[in-house]
Length: 397
Ligand SMILES: [Zn+2]
Image 1 (cartoon, rainbow, N blue to C red):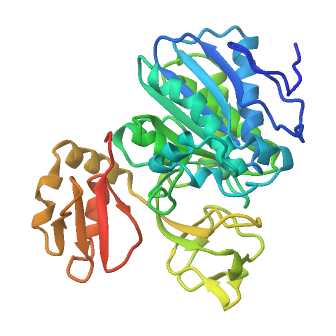
Image 2 (tube, rainbow, N blue to C red):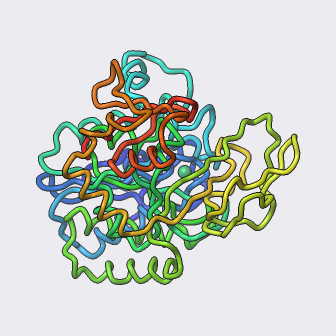
Image 3 (tube, rainbow, N blue to C red):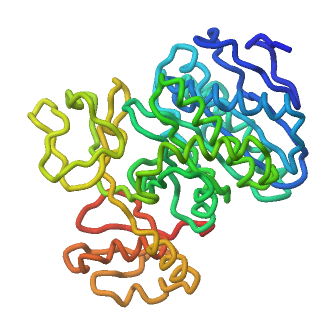
């Protein structure tokens, strides 16, 4: 059965996409709503960036296949589309980045405004209207899979807030885990939903236009269905999905941490050198890009992540470093025993005078590894790195 893209989506229905490009409205907001309302719930979001259609295609395919194979789900999966308007024109965004706009106080203001002018504000409100009932009516855990692709080439990887629950969800996906990303960029949907108690990851499925990215995104949806408890672990699609991703990530580190973000502004004239890719080795001082002041070099040894090969966006590239898996076990242990009760005793560390559970680190006094110690304990930095750094513990860890 085929549907036109303009049709209003209905309950328990899946709308196969008619291919690219979409009509002027973009793909439907709700790609599918399958399963039963009791039990765990999985929310899959695709296309928060309008130049990333492969996630939408992969999600649609997985949902269609669940329906076509009459697979019964022990919970509900809801597939949502992000920036419909931007998807219809194939741009990352029209007015501003929809995945840098999810600040609770801003959302409150938008809810109260009657006619938001920016296209992304309208998209955000429509998404909020779909999401809020899903969060309110839940009677089990809620999981999130946020599908993306990158402008540069490279294999799939997951991006997550470093909470213990997110980690154990992420470990189901046989791709590298990238930690520390949310300290660098603010206002992401996944950070907002993590603050609302959802467990989940962002999944980067490869390069924007690459057909394999849709396959990887589809594989991620199957694995997320199982990881959230909706699908039995012997479902035939799962072995296939895992094999798909495993084959491509066999040589890659299991866990990496963001150590550097090269932030850019539109006026910088930033240009990545050609032929860089995600997880490529870089050394300190190695030129990787240029801007109006000359060559841009990597400030450290590490692996390159998400080199920018598109006009829009304010992250030039990231450098990540491998994290030893034993670190995860150790940090799980110290979080369980809440060692942060003692951190204010360290030199250069004091409790934040106004924010409960937050600390201020004076980097001139604090020892070299103090910030690392906070990461280990499950804290995230808020605000920029200056002389003083503010750290808070993630909620729901
Ligand atoms: Zn994206």
